[in-house]
Image (cartoon, rainbow, N blue to C red; front, side):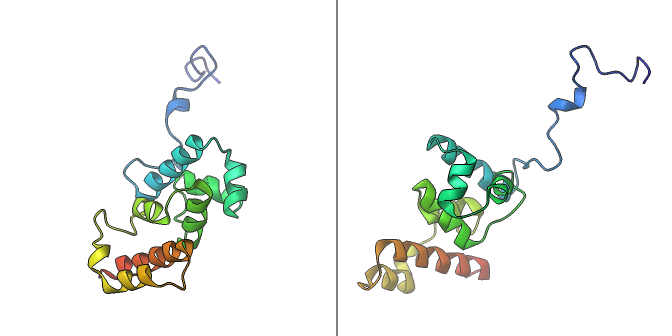
Length: 140
């Protein structure tokens, strides 16, 4: 290596401060979701491993979600939401599966799910999250 090729004093290359190619881009949906999950995890004082255990997903998979490398399924988002004590709807909105102002109160299907006495509150929440993800994906 010639002196011109050597890193500046301090031993770091100038590129060390440049984000890696696999780092989430601030404008990407997956990156924004991952950042939100990481912020919620840190606010809950949970390690990556502890959240992965609580959510029932692998540590590397959760790390990839947080870095915006994977877009998790509705089931995984619901598991993470439960582990973080946030609503699945909140994570689905962050993932872009729900619009910011879903008019759920005027939807007869949503109203029926909310009125069903056979469902627990958790079952309602998960069923609504799945229903809204499907209807958002179909453009309805």
